[in-house]
Length: 206
Image (cartoon, rainbow, N blue to C red):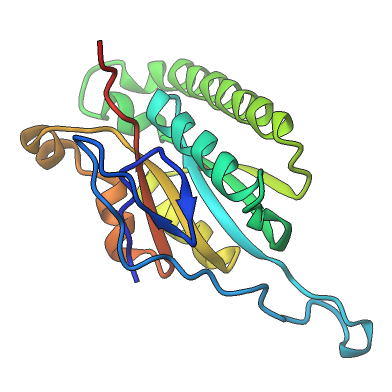
């Protein structure tokens, strides 16, 4: 089942119940299953593979808000369900060719420089994510930088880590921009084989 999270407020029985202007309630509540007992070693060893919550991040404030929101509501406080889950933080590093295209003259010469910049951005993104995670004292966490389209990278991560939840930020694109650029969150909502939370950062009110 797919759910859209459009609030920053409290979580109550996995029902997000803010009714502030600009947000909506989430119903029915999300019922996360308990830790799945999947043997990772011999049966006699009794080892169990923990399920995962995957958070997709890029260098935008929207994705870091989604990560912070997930940490606040799933891995801290009285409703800390993180004890039963592994946190997986995934950054999709774009292909250099997807940034500059391949048609222009001299594009091949520019690719190494673009790739270097993308690697620097990926390092910065992961380091910032680590700071947020460490602040919440989350120990069972995996960080991944995977090259490719974010839509495919995130849905693949869901499969590889047997995730129960995928959390992504909402960039708030308009209709035209969404049609041109595509929406990672929309794609994941329709193709990821798990619950998808699209966390929308509330607009600042003055």
